[in-house]
Image (cartoon, rainbow, N blue to C red; front, side):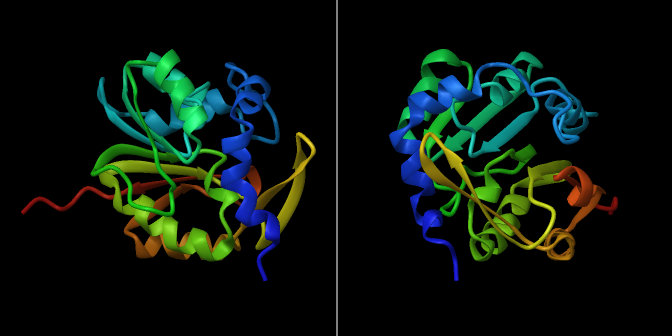
Length: 207
């Protein structure tokens, strides 16, 4: 049975958008638990052309991840369920395309050169992750990448943030591998240790 706090996660970020902007800040995290954000973003965009299209799902305020991708010269389309966070992104990062959307619904039309769900997919219940991950994968263009973060074992973890429960969940690593494989993506970095998954869609064979 899914923990009741799972139903609150969208409302939490809607109600506390200003708090999240303050707490998250504008600087990439470094060296924490193997998830050095600058290193992972470099891996994510390695080999992409200038101006590559990136879909950032659960983009928050656009800071610092979307901002870093824009600084690299890429075209960023961000979606998040919090109107306050999207308003912040629109005001502070006007070169990106930002819109309010729940990742459990439809995404902007792709395909994209990169699809990112950084510290966002793991706020969904395991059942919802099983539905959303193939949809994320379907947005990835030929030869391009999907990156997302997860826990390291199947289950739910309830943290605390600003005095309220903060819901996280994960699938078993075998389930992530199977979902990615079934979606036509090959795992380049396995998240079992780092909590970061990076997978690529193969180029189609020349006809």
